[in-house]
Image (cartoon, rainbow, N blue to C red; front, side, top):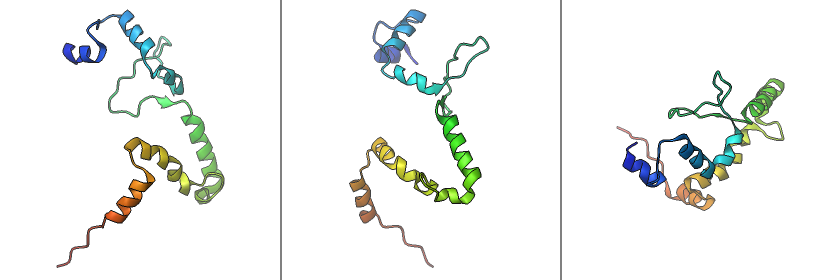
Length: 126
């Protein structure tokens, strides 16, 4: 990142020092979310910087428990897990649709309008 770009983001008081980095960390509005992730640890026992751009990022703390629950259901119910209450797999996407819709700016009304407006392409014939 160029100095000019960094100053745009962090202000003219930008400096390359641990004290400035700690000040930015203290002012970070997302800092409270740090505890929701299992961060990688280096040989010295300290958490390491996670700066990989092509990655899923650090593991959310609840992931192991969620995977364990679902694999237990898979082992217990097999294919019937698709329909077994209280959380059948076939309904999984419906639990995430409201959050996903708000992420992309969609509403149930806009989706209904899209269904009415969109016409699938007709198959070509010779």
